[in-house]
Length: 90
Image 1 (tube, one colour):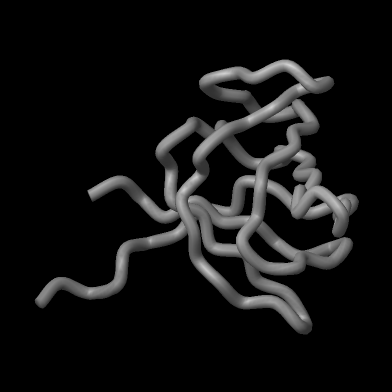
Image 2 (image 1 turned 30 degrees about the horizontal axis):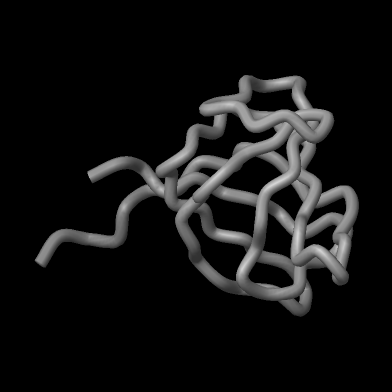
């Protein structure tokens, strides 16, 4: 079995909308695409999920590059300053 895939830090959580289940991510280290697998890690957070949709200013987009602020649906509660990693594609 291969070692765990290397993860790349792509951004951090800046806000969480609990009523929508949406995390806002400031992309500081790379791009994010629909279909990517992300790992959200923080003081009280640690889960992995796939990215089903990405929104920039309420518009669906297939990908977003470094410097953008995006919203994605998250399966668990996230917290400000949680780090978002992209698992390398297999």
